[in-house]
Length: 151
Image (cartoon, rainbow, N blue to C red; front, side, top):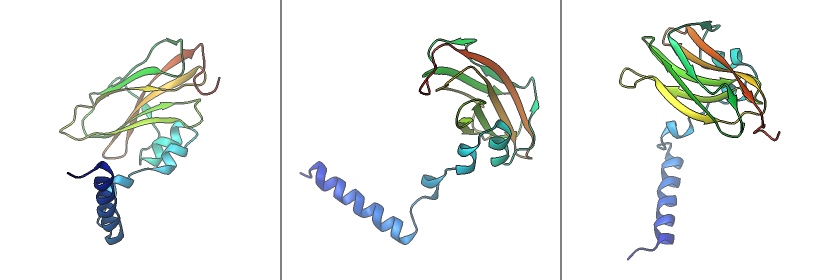
């Protein structure tokens, strides 16, 4: 019977072989550093190929009016727009504005929920970026009574 240690060694050997030959899946490294380093909503949208966002009733954002604990603020984003490529959730006054990015295709219903950490009262945005680079958003102010980012 194979022990966990032997299984781990074997797995690491296979991963090393794949990485050395360039066959390691590239999606394992799918990370847009510019988007996560963005300090503003516009910069994060631009990093994903979106134009200046325009407010739209076809994008919906659900978040509480008051978050009693900024460490776990529930948020949901959805859209009824056709041809959406990305759906972003952003918090304007966080150190990094981008909270989450969801890739959308025709096979995926563009409705997602997550939890975010907020350090202070801020506008929260749901931004839908279409395949042709147009960006549409919905926003809501969330008041934070106890900060979650060290506050």
